[in-house]
Image 1 (cartoon, rainbow, N blue to C red):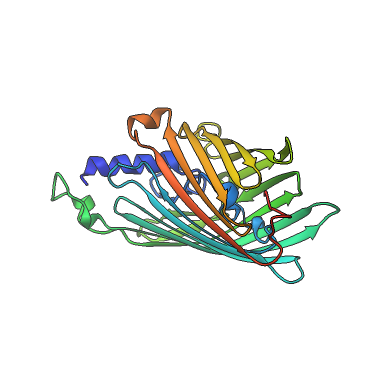
Image 2: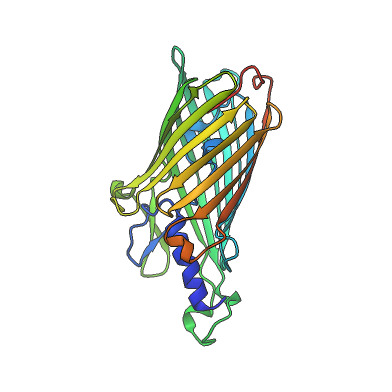
Length: 321
């Protein structure tokens, strides 16, 4: 990969990551961003810690995403999440991790999750916290350079270990759901000595808001519309992300839907199959319909697998949220 290709990959990352708010935009800021997930509705712990325990079973999810397939150095993202309610159903615990590689950069995020549930008349209200760290390492020595003597690319970048905390709130019942989360409270910047310094700024918070509902068209046919908004005061209106989704559920077996993501201007096709009441597999394909079509004509794909342990998950009592 030469310097021009590496720069293009970095630009791709900036367009795809839903959040830059922790970082601002000056040259001293450190930002790992947040990867885009097309199937976040089936992996809610990745966007909101208050989602922990909402499935009323030990839920395990793994996913693999290939961003801008066919582009040299394009991102590859793997994630795993585990969460479960405790015996009294008031407290839930979870763990999530994601591993991303793009170009010569590798990043890892590992977070523990805690949620507290308040049972209302026909619904639940959950408050969640997460704590962990983001780790990033860039090795420039693997690049094929036009100018082999360029001092910028002759050494590896110092690895970053950035501890952080986040929080969220989630409300749901059998007909609709809504949530709000702040993925990170801390921001980081480089000092004159090359070290990292944590600081706090409300103006650089990222707010992820999502909501949706379930429309029973018939006993065998349901429709699940939803929307996600990723907003930051730092970005204002220029890079606010909107995801508008619609899923059709057939016989509680097949989920087929479509999504439109504004920041990348992509159309997403979604397909999930409930193989058993406990096991679900899903595929999605992102087709670049706007400015990204000039860089990636193949698009992006994502695979997800979810398995839920415990007797509470059954065909007679499916979970839609």
